Image 1 (cartoon, one colour):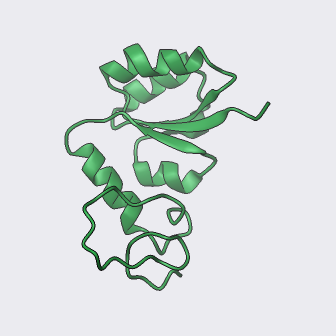
Image 2 (tube, helix red, strand yellow):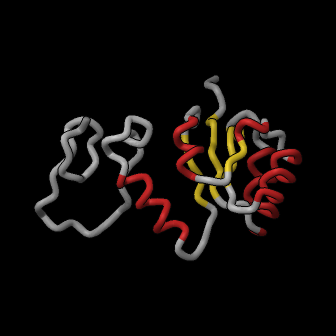
Image 3 (cartoon, one colour):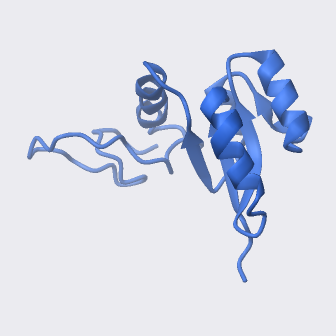
Length: 128
């Protein structure tokens, strides 16, 4: 059997606390909460303690969590403008090796999109 998927959780609001995180910890054979990220330091600390996330894997800034690495997947459990900002952070950093492996957000095809030769994102960059 393969190793559990190492998840990074972005957004630790009421639904994440009551629904998503408890369900994830019920399946340790499939998922590990590897890191968490939220704007509130208090919430991050309390939930980190509750769900066994090491102190070095608790973040308040998305960029820091992504740069730290060690994740197989991300769950974005935020609402409002946060998901838009999230996609801007991920897709805008194509030249950064830490972000080049993350996909661009789904969007309408314009018919003239080029893919970056390094990461495959739909941006015109040098790929370096």
